[in-house]
Image (spheres, rainbow, N blue to C red):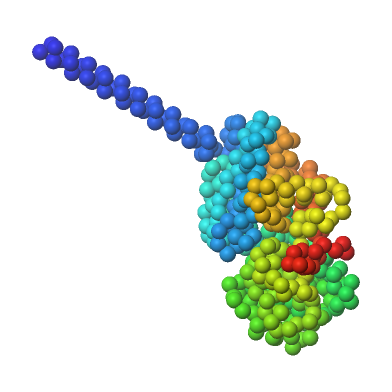
Length: 397
């Protein structure tokens, strides 16, 4: 009987020991997961060795013509950061969310990044998406580097893309050089498209440029012949298109099919390879507000060209393709966050304060930044580009 009791006691002791071992292993696994991907913002902001930065880009879906290069940039930057050992000994982890060209999914992505403890966020690819995520991100006290123009008026929002007013000034110069004073305007009926005209109207009114016709189209439309036929009746001297691809390219193809013999000027949202592919071999008199990154080999020597060439060469070496202005906007957002971290700022509050008060005449890839009076970069990163031999042609204005 005593032997049986001893055996039972030994068995119970052994079972308890095994239970303690399994419990300890389970706790170790949970803690490891927390330290690499689920830490609180306070820990990520400086108490730990990992600083997390969020990114919200449209890697898939219709807006992937813009967002794919931004998603690729994240992979390039993470590789470079890992190779150089982070910043000042702290590991930098960029967590990217693909919102699939769906604003609702972008809001969910913002929630996820906030819960994962990011100290800043770069994105989104589209203007409408950016406006959808601004309240969520700024409400959490996290600085947002926007890569699409939204006319930011909220504390903690820093725009990396040129404003519509800046783009309008470039177009105005182009028109005046050609003695054009009557234009027609056509835009997509989405966040980016409808925001362009009010900004240009101010520029036009100040420079005696008359807008003789205005048409709109659904962002998913596949033919704009009716709108362009209506525009023809007003006898404009040039047409301005405010849309992204693929809509921008469809307008351009319809424009050519209808035999217009006036210049067409496209917004910077169409300055990508997808647009060039859409208008291949039929692109005379089509111009675009384009980034100097797209024509870096044609630029005069100087610091701006050196910086742009480094991004272009690094990107091309990894992906065997060219970056575009959307890549540059995202890169500027990340680089300014990196500058804040190098200066010893590792929390959301510190980074936002640094960006607001210490970015003066910073030469970025999209232009020169002064975030105290913040409306995006100066126009020195952009130019009106023509198309020659199915590629962008730079001409200094």
